Amino acid sequence: MKTFKKIIHFLFVIGVPFVGFSQITTKKVTFPTGKSSTTINAAIKGDQTIDYVVTANAGQVLNVKLTTKSTSLYFNVLPPGSNDEAIFIGSNEGNSFGRTLNTSGSYKIRVYLYRSAARKGVSANYSLSISAKGGASTSSSDAKVSGTNYNATGNLRAATGGNSTSATFGVIRSSGGKAEVHTKISGGLSRVFVFSQGEWSCKSENCKLTFAKIGADEWELIVNDYEKYYIPDAVIYGG
Image (cartoon, one colour):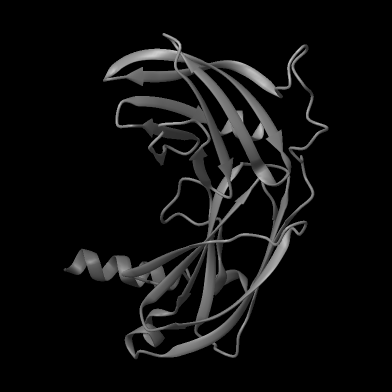
């Protein structure tokens, strides 16, 4: 108990809010067609926490601005793969964030009430402006592999029925961090996967797809509970 009290005291001394994040709601951020910014108007109450997930590329500038009348409402920014370690802590650094990103992936913008206000069940309205602009755009300027329509080709880790194997791939990248990945697993199975706004879909027939981010920079795609494909972020974004 004494050790726990010391930890809490330390958190307050360094200015990091002790927030339990017991009710985290995740919402995917999408930009209107042709735009690279959006504004979200919402409300929060008590110990509720909201993670706004935005997909951005290394080299882009991510800007976030929180507007609210509440003096107890803040946001943190968490890098790809992190569930707790933040690169920006609003209670220390204010209500505006702007930074050139050095990693491609899904960033969490975590909105929450300071613990003392959360315990009282306080509610707050807010406006959250988010943009991801500039940087290394994955567009038609991305060089093509000679003699193909692909921006990159290579090999992926794969598995069938629990047996490890490999798959060849070719990727077609487009603006906004979108990618279409054509794969051919050893033995002849071909699939076409599409990545957009942090989610995967399958364009092939008879393709029941599930997916998950494993580690900080790799996706596991499972088809029909039998085929597995491991796709690094570098395939999607380049680099």
